[in-house]
Image 1 (cartoon, rainbow, N blue to C red):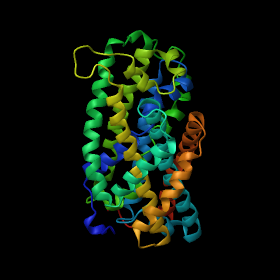
Image 2: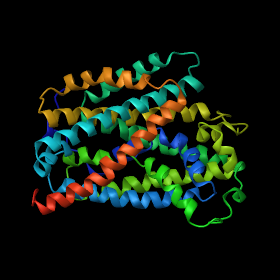
Image 3: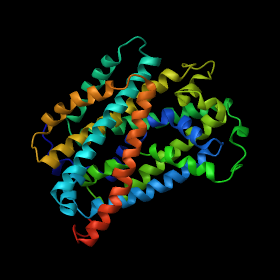
Image 4: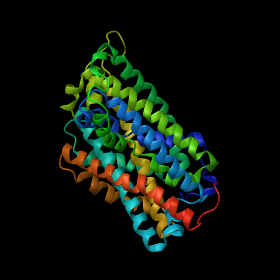
Length: 368
């Protein structure tokens, strides 16, 4: 189960698949509610587009930094730029972030599953089952994870887009008007929650080291963010257009509520929410798996521990305890907001600082 790095290389397309799978996790179920509350006007979709462009710029800075240190993860090359002590502090912060993200995603998955599919099933039981399935998958290494992601992603995108577009019977274009009726300021207020929904690009800090052709990491980042932006945009437009701005603000899971609010007679499935839930559980599971893997790689590279399986299993109790810490859905969302804020500092500001430092101190080679 030890991963042999030369054999563990991934293609540019596989890097795109990892980014999209990571990004389209629990956030898409709550994105319409959080952004609508912040914006307060039907211009939510503009905030999503602007956030996508901003994150693409941040992502390109991040992969530019990674390409200066070919074959090394952020946990390895930070030491060369900042020195050991600062590298350990930053590395531990990133490991903690990835671990808590894994716990948060698995808790959201348990909450949604418990509410809609497995009523009266204890949260701890759902969390434990998915954790053990996850450890089985990541034990195979990155190449095995990517192969599973390549199966999950096309199915998810096909069914999700089909279900969202089927809701056009409820869609009213009037719910998206007027455009910029209150000016640009509401749109700017929606940037923060929109940016938080794009967390996922930071996975390139780890997987750029495993790419067959690191020169194409910019391309992978751009395509990954473009696909995610299109999915977010379709979701926001259809949910706001169908449920209206006021209808969204009071709903916990507006995307699911939209799919539950219509049925089509004569098809094999007349109601679609169970199908969407099954697909989206796989998607949230993907995010849990890749973040657990990134945390394990971080511990291995930062502390120079050889045995990856031991690290993976050692993280399980921390993920389990963190997943069960929130007492209710509101506390789970508060944890998600905290993670989103942390991601801004760790993966939006930090890459630029490290890139500038590496240029000033002449650390790292030319682009791979």
